[in-house]
Length: 285
Ligand SMILES: [Zn+2]
Image 1 (cartoon, protein in one colour):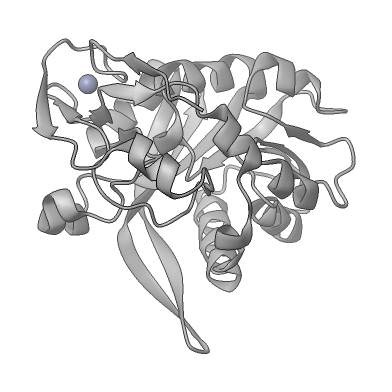
Image 2 (image 1 turned 30 degrees about the vertical axis):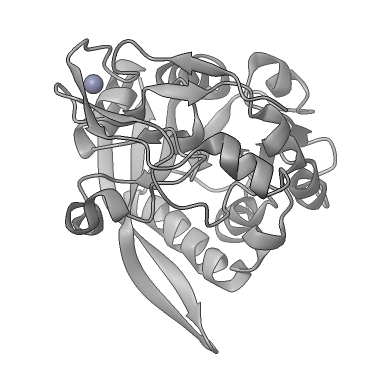
C-alpha cells in the first residue's frame, strides 16, 4: 500500500495562518510500514517524530502539517494484542475517567453513552457499572469491535465516526455523553470531528469527553522531541488552549480540563502515574 498525503495550510484547530516548524521529521512512515510488514496497532510503541510537526502561534496547537490521509486500512486491520496487554491498567484508567465525570454531577442515572473509538468496550463497561448506562460504540478495528459488540448487539458499529455509522446504531437517538478517549490525537480534522459530534450525536446540555496527551504537560516540556506521545499515528498534539478552542468553537460551554492519571502495571502492582495526558469535558449549548 502506498501512503497518500494531504497538507494543512493553517492550524487545524483555530485556522490561524501563523504556523511554524517546531520539530522536523526524524523517521519515515514508509520505512515503518515496510519493515513492520504493515502490522499496525493504534497503541503500538512506534515512538518518534514521523512528520514535520508545526506549532500554531495563536493557540499553541502542535500538528503534523503534511499527514497521511489513507490509513483507514491500518485501523480496520489493527489487532488488539498490544492494546490488551494493559488490560488491568486500562480498566483503572477508565474508572478514573468515569469518576472524574461523576464528580461533576452533570450526568444522571441510566444515561445514553456513545463511545467513539470505543475499542473493546472497556470504558463503556465502566459507564454501565457506575451509571447503569445504555452504551453505544463506534470502532474502526474489526477485531476490537467484535469484542465490544458482545452484550451490545446492534449497538456497536464498525468504522469511523460519521453520520452513516451513527445510523448503523440500533435504537440510538442522541447521547447524554459522547466519549472519545485517546482518539482526537489520531483525527486529521479535529474541528470537523468535534462539530459533527455537537451537531449529530449529542442532546442539548449533553457532555463531551476527550482524553488526549497535552503539550503543556511537564513530561512534554522536559522531554521535548523525545516525548513518548510523539508517535506515527498521532497527528494532533493539543495544548490546553487549543483543546479549549476546539471545544468552544464547536459550541461547547463550561469546558474543564484536568490531569488524566493513568495506571501502569509493574509486576503484580498497578501504579497511578501522571504521564502528561488530560481529560476535557464540555457541555453542549
Ligand atoms: Zn491554532
